[in-house]
Image 1 (spheres, rainbow, N blue to C red):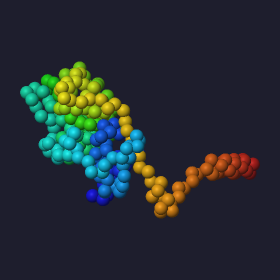
Image 2: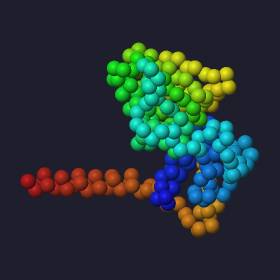
Image 3: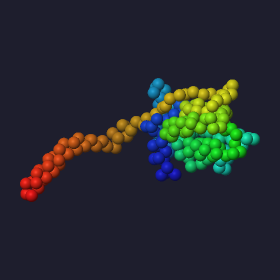
Image 4: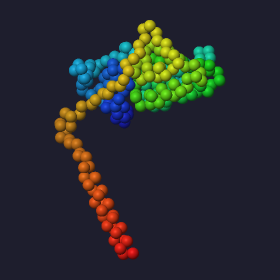
Amino acid sequence: MSHVLPRLAQKIFNTPLAIHPRKAEIVVAALADRLGVGQMVRLSGGSVPLAMEDDEYGFAEPGLNPRTGYDMAGPVAVIEVQGTLVQRLGSLRPFSGMTGYDGIRQNLFAALDDPNVEAIVLDIDSPGGEVAGCFDLVDTIYAARGRKPIWSILNESAYSAAYAIASAADRIVVPRTGGVGSIGVITAHVDLSQALLASKSRSLPSATSKPTAMPNYRCRKRRWRASRRTST
């Protein structure tokens, strides 16, 4: 598990995330001990407790079904879009509270080519997720409109990246208690300044001498060519 943590931190920190801010806080708080996060502070100045529960969304449960593909409700293919959205999950079904853009795309292509499918429903309940891969999937869904009816049915929220996916369909159905929006991205910033001072680390300067080295090399090369022409 330890070898996964650096990759996980790279996905969470210092990179744009199209996710509901509260969900982002929950994710970081859940991994705080393993990632060495000692304190979480909002830009507004308020602190974030490190012991948080995901009661608002209920995405902590394992994937609903490990089977591949989509469910059929009569002639309608139901593609699940549940939990935190990631670029690559390697699963066609939601797994461990996440759904991959790769799985949604593959299910969409399969449903479009399936002669038994007359319409497609995106069953969405997600706070959003990664920016990487999101808008490519949105373009794919939008381009598929017209081949078969595509509806987004929220069960019952679609925030940020999930709302981008929902908006690409022909129609969005929102229940009376559902939620949409949180458009835009957030970035979780890691402040390592105090840790670097404590370890007496210093940053390396940029290679400012590199541009000045290139003309010297070119001059020598020109002189070599000139001497070669003279000798011949």
